[in-house]
Image 1 (tube, rainbow, N blue to C red):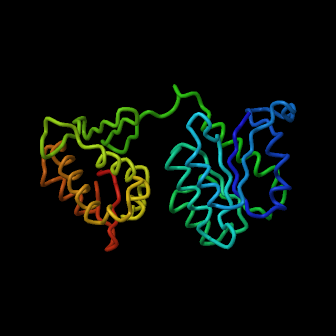
Image 2: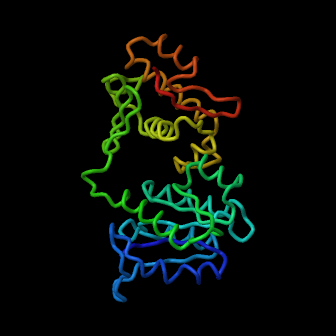
Image 3: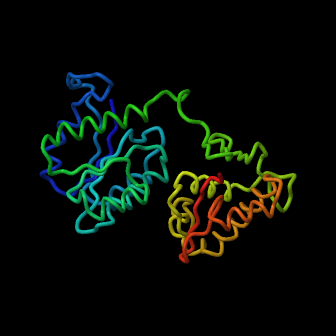
Length: 271
């Protein structure tokens, strides 16, 4: 049984896909429908507010296996985006599919640029039932891989982040607190570095980083973001063994680089 979290504001699409999603066996190679007693668990929401409330109330033990979201909900082009961001804050590895009438538009571009979906499917296409099912099966096959086979480290060039312990190494040297090198780097800079690496080569703005950190938007300002970046650069420079050399790499657009004039930074592994 697969738990499916679905947000769709148009009843005719819900009627079209409900039985299909409930009865399909998403196991690899499965062709027959599920028995009545083993139907998939399908939660459907027509409004983003209801979906967001449900996310906040759901325990990890009852987390969905996959989410299907309409991009535009009840006239709000950001409706699906807000739900996706909330889902990914709580369950970062959750596979998300956008099922939308806005394929090929700026909405689809925005969805991929912001990293809020793994797939974007046009509703109005031939054999949409089959397309939706095989795309979902592909995502579920990846996400339901046994934990022993899942990636436990994030690697970018000579940077290595342990996704279990959150320890970070640069060129084989563990990153430490630059103000007190007997202590490890603080959690928030480590999280920021992970998000920068995962978003690479896209830059991450102050607003995006605040959302990913689940920080208070009134308290997490560009000044806060910049201070954490300074700490990260200093810690990386110390591990690098030549502070001036690493800082020059950052100025040249490598390492942790400043992007534009909108308070954004990006990670680019030095070559």
